[in-house]
Image 1 (cartoon, helix red, strand yellow):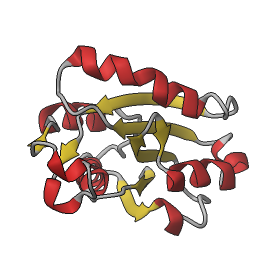
Image 2 (cartoon, rainbow, N blue to C red):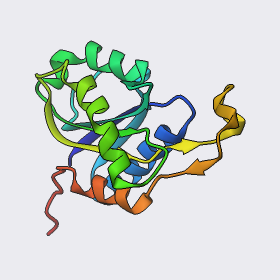
Image 3 (cartoon, rainbow, N blue to C red):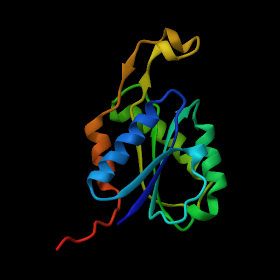
Length: 163
């Protein structure tokens, strides 16, 4: 059975929600899956795939995602690795492509990574949870759960054959 680690770096919780959903989809597909905060991912031994979730803030990966990449650099060099990022406040594909370079810049510091998939999902604005001036923005949830599911099922997991 494929063992998958889904570490997430989330400022307001929406990245964590997506990470938990991806974990559930992977479990439904037959993988064993651990979903943890990136700062709590201490050991990658025994995993067959890692799927890092991060928010994009001011053009950068979340600080805990950057720390995860630095801390696990050697382990990740030998492990299939996928990344999803959330950031654009729209589900428009053109807006997602505008922020893709931000994700790529964050990952290019780690050329040793064996990236099997990267994806950008729309973000969430919950003004009640945001500091000024962001709490003046209109509320919106731009996550496309069908798109997130397609990403999850596209990840390379091995499912044992049943007799």
